[in-house]
Length: 633
Image (tube, rainbow, N blue to C red; front, side, top):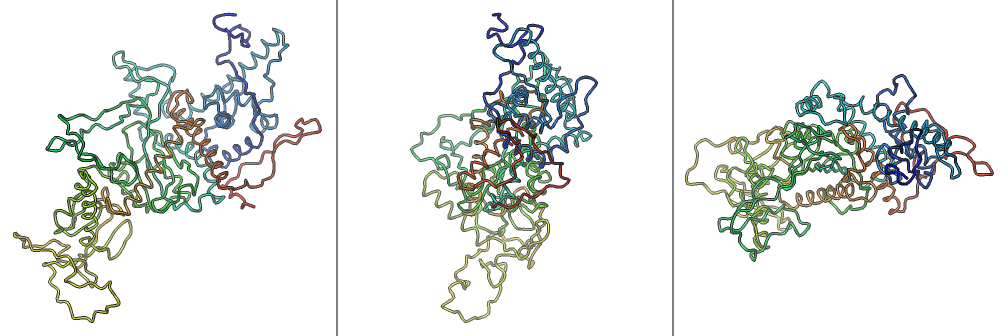
């Protein structure tokens, strides 16, 4: 027994132990699972986006699709998404019929217990050769999908790494990067689309929630002292906890940051028993070297629909932390939107919502999605104005709305007791009387609005709108009819202006959809409808992130399950992990709902009397168009 091979593992001819030494699974993967995964990947459209797998002169490599499916099967077996576990799964955990389906050489690589030294050397050499074929195919596939190929096993100088990062963001390589993201998106949506067409998402209203979460990598950060870049060149420092200092009350006590939601103890305002802080304390900031992943999850903004549809991931984009969160969020939901799954509400965290209007908010208008946003503390009240109307909390109001109503959002955030919080909410609800009325909706988010003091259904009376009201017979059985005496009155200020704004002088004005698009939203901030939509979508979002990070089998938070370096490899391996996580979530949902699996024709190998497979699995030609699954029996 040597130091390099303490367990006397099978060695190849040179006498050195295989690296890594093969660890054959203790069981064989069911042919039904292999056929199911093969059909999902084949109908996903990802295989058509893979580059051609023609190899250089030498031994023929394994097809790219075989390597990709091998990674999925390895992850499904609970091993990992590493390439060494993939080749062990392909050669040790499949039946002869499954190997024929995936174009895997049917070679027995197992070493008998009574094998001689010569037989051990021969089989070990075959193991080494087969593993190299899989590794070579994986390296070739990732290299052809990489817009900036380089040696991913060597830490480059910082200047060289900077050039490679520029190539990833160059316009000339945009198609290559988008093709890589499309392959990952097709893999993630493969089990979801099959479940969607089967009717598992019937009760899902089509709302979507997007969040930016860190993904750890198996690599160190750049070493600026030695001028050495990281092996993960496009990764970066992900900041947790924020960098802003908390606001401090004049009396010395820190102002609690109330998020405005109604769920969780963290959203409750602080009590007056809180001891005042003696000095300002900086929010703890945690910086980690990771990738950033924008993930999209299905959610519901209204109603109690928890457990009514599978908790899956609908999209994923891996990018450098702190760069283009808005465009990445759009690309994460684009494939599901094009397949007709997403409509109505779109919810994102504050980091994504702060993107420039042209990068996110204007694009949402083109897609017809209504954003549910939460702003920073300095933007919860007045956010701008247009032709006299002031935008407060995402909605247009009268320019003479009382100041306590304008600052009600700040009052709500600074509330410390239940009484103060209830008072602030009453002020927020009182804004609706001063809200400008929408007369007509146009294209691209355009709206025609009217002064709240105009029309037979006026909600306020204003000195700028002196209208003689004709006498009318009031029906006592119709309590909805309001009189001028019952409406809030807009008093005349001490210093009135001579020229009134357009909203006060004209009958109606048209507000283009692109005006203040960053702050406008369907439900005004902190109202009951907004709190219901925000809390519901955000809880679904955080729950989806937790499922991907805390799962015992399919966790993206463990970098040991994704050892290959490079953004191409990390994108594909994260997609493989989410593919399996979605497949498990759908099966778990069907089991909880008591849905029996649909009966399909068995493509597994037939067996003779001795139990040996007689015929290989049947392989059908790839369809030119996506196939609709048959109805459930």
